Length: 180
Image 1 (cartoon, rainbow, N blue to C red):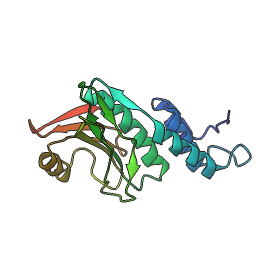
Image 2: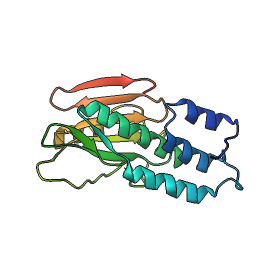
Image 3: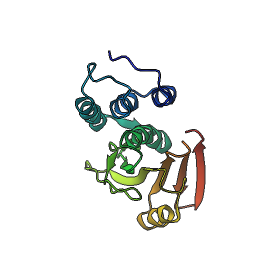
């Protein structure tokens, strides 16, 4: 098991829910691991591979989005807080939800997501991060896209650690926690 230095960047990641993928990604990119412990690029590739296989399934759309957004948050930070990470949320035929693994379009203010659908599944939501370069919270563009696609929109801002949900059917923004 790699040993972590006591630097503040590492401590911030460890104290924030302790998600292993976030720790690994942040450690690989912030210098928390020494070169003799593990090669950072190999570690980052392994962590991103784990992210690809992560499951975000639950009976509640907020729980599903929240689990995926936490990994998207850490992936965004590990990528230098330069690019949004995002994914789609699907409603399964039995009523449960699942989300695709966070991906990036390598853009600071936009992110496009895709997901494969099984028979009877429908895309009902979109989650993403906002980098420090964008305003925290649900943006006007987020609202417009949510209304146009009829999908619940979720955002987690890296600058504040706050999460929000926008529902196009009600026009209501719900604060999901700060920090999320």
